[in-house]
Image 1 (tube, rainbow, N blue to C red):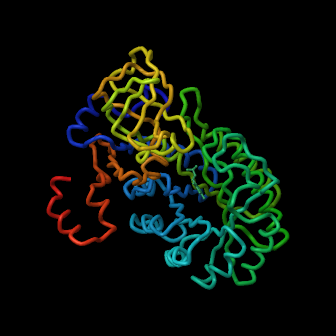
Image 2: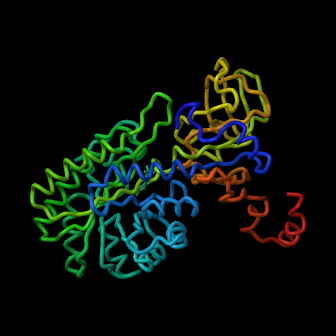
Image 3: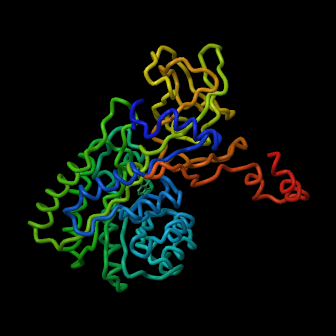
Length: 430
Ligand SMILES: *Cc1c(COP(=O)(O)O)cnc(C)c1O
């Protein structure tokens, strides 16, 4: 959500919440997440068996993944802990997609053991997978179109030719043939070449490209495809002037290409899958933080109690995240601030030269669109601890769905004489 007036909580509500839960924290909106998921499923309702495999990395909290499961989503995983999240919330077998790259053996073993659809990133992973886990009954390959596909400006993944992912076009033909010879009968095709993309034509072109490729692959190799996975990457409007993709229109556009390139061309029908992360949860999360310092030197700074360890995107990509000063939504935005965290890194800034209302110490700031790649990208640099995650449930109640880390958690992975004893003893002081 990209303006001051579309928050899912009131100022008074947040005041109540912070009496119980210290800032900073991320808070998510169950209702918003569910309604959006239903819109996506409705948009692709024409496609029998449509599924969005939620890219767990966007918001790897089992409570959130579980909500999306109830809305029909599978899980797109790329590590052992992500696979374990899917397993623990009861997402089973082919409802898990394992789209990894540079994959260690134990992760293939786990994915294979869970019966996940394994989406291979390279042709050399065929013998690697066979040796470490075995040959599954269904296989998918990730396609990298390289120079055959130019990318849109501002795309995080970048130019396909420079991207480390996927197989070349020629390798794909070889790879499916190898798998077929090994007895595999169920096939899927995948690509993921856009991220945070707001131009629907990018997805329409991708669908067209993959549909044509499936036609060619099935004709040449005499195999049938069970699914195509169009990848994730649907963007969200971070900036006030940006507009969300109309999912219904996107679904309809892809439908007409499916009718033309697949149905009318007599290609065997297949399911359409996506693996969106960002669009599923991004707009439905906020990072709530408190102003604790103001500083006037060459520029005006507001220091907050969150830092880049709680939300990395502005520091890492220069990404814009809208900021609302709660209770001052309608006050004149006549101050220009850098909103900063406490890391000893000068790029620890949530906003640079942002026009905002005058901010006083103690004011609560809501940083928008942190429901995806927010908490998820958190880290412990500078000894900073990860925050809590809260969920506003459909009935309006607030649930703590992950507690904040404590200093004890920070010390949990090392062992030096006396440390455990002392920290156990002094937990109350930390
Ligand atoms: C990150 C990722 C996604 C999800 O991307 P979003 O931009 O969050 O939709 C899906 N698939 C793969 C393979 C990814 O790496």
